[in-house]
Amino acid sequence: MKYLYYPGCSLEGSAREYDRSTRVFLTAAGAELTEIEGWTCCGASAAEATSRNLALALPARNLALAEKMGGTKEILVPCSACYLNLKAVEEKVKRDAALLDRINDILAAEGLHFAGRVRVRHLLEVIVRDIGPDLISKKTTRSLAGLSIAPYYGCQCLRPYAIFDDPEAPQSMAPIIEASGAAVHHWDMGGKCCGAAHMNTKMAVGMELVRSILSRARGADAVVTVCPMCQMNLEAYQDKISKLSGENLTVTVLYLPQLLGLVLGLSEQEVGLDLNLAVTAGFKEKLRESLDTAAWRRSNRLDNHRRMAADV
Amino acid sequence: MTTKVKEEIDFSDAAGSDDLTPVREMVQACIQCGTCTGSCPNEFAMDVTPRRLWRLVLTGQREEIFQSQTFTLCSACYYCTLRCPRGLPLTEAMGALKQLAAREGLTRHRQSILFYKSFLESVRRHGRVREMEFMTLYFNAMKNPLLPLRFAALGVKLMLKGKLPLQIPSKGGGALAALFRQAAELEEVP
Ligand code: SF4
Ligand code: SF4
View 1 (cartoon, chains in turn green, brown):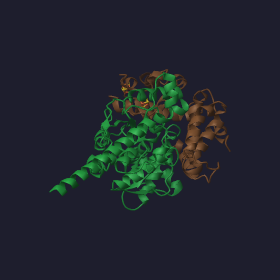
View 2: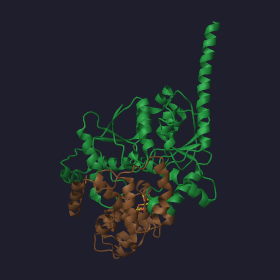
View 3: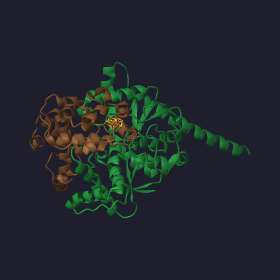
View 4: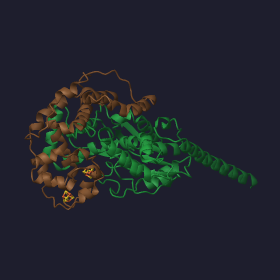
């Protein structure tokens, strides 16, 4: 499992724990990442809203850099917005040679050329397809039994390109969560929109979208996400939204690889749990309890084995 | 340096003569079934429904299209694109309208335009967006002293977590200046 790694801008700043947990979890699962040398911004939602050419050239620049690297042509992307920007260029040039020419005319300004020979993959796809629940169960040193986890996919890893999941009723995370020992919180908000950049320009609308998601997360111990924008929207405005709606909507929100890293035996520190904005005290307590119980059960089981062996 | 984003744009109230043709071509096959409207998570906040917006595009009603906030309320969830029975690239069409509004610097959409332009200015300078610089550019361009307050609490939270690297604001080396220039020059080429 070798991948070129495109972290994207957020993972260097407000989503540092996503970068950290992605790296340590994938390494623990046996994958190898090589960061794309000299990568730059994919254009986020800003390029698409401003200039068609930039919306093509900014992602394409990174694909061209990836092509120049030796070895694998698989690019792993943890941010759903980056993923879709890069993926859209990969997909569009396959069917449109003129578009590829147009892109290369722009990239020529930097002496770069894109041939269209890369495969862009979302972190979630790599987790569910390449790593898979079996490997996670096998490598699991701890269990999250007793916790209920709400899988949140957001939009852009699911749509418009239906690569690894059902874009209407996503479910790829369920077996992964179950492999961790936790229960899946069943809800119908997994693929709903968090409002993306609305929190900055249309705050009232963004708050309403997030409110409807958080209110359906009630009963879950945590929500897991696979995108820094979703994560920020769901975790950063909980107090404000709770106050406005008159109900307590606080809930722990984690990145999927943070949760999985813990299960594989990594520490809270190693997966960056101290960096999240919404981790409730109750959740931490329950998490530690669950991990402890699992450790206790295992050592107990070992003791029993030893005792039995001694008896014989 | 921080006022730069604002100076570059010549805001105006009137939608100019920029061509709607590319957008019209994208939605040409619309049968007005309303699936897009029914699928849109932001429809509750829109003054014109997506279905009606496509009708306005097809009949070339520029004034009404750009008066409306509908396209700026698209958060690119791709539900409509996924479900449209005619398979039309609707999210992309929303994007194309955003681009037209940005190109013409329509005052009505000033906030979104300045937000995205500030973001891209930081990218042009450094190659990667610097969240602090980008928000500073945005606040300065908006010239609204109350706006930063809305983000102050979050900013402090992020800073305490060490998530907002305090880079010295700078024009940078114009890391992507050449690419941006080329993209702008070729924008006119159909
Ligand atoms: S879903 Fe497609 S065909 Fe139906 S109204 Fe919307 S754009 Fe037209
Ligand atoms: S892509 Fe935009 S217009 Fe379409 S359903 Fe989503 S938010 Fe609405």
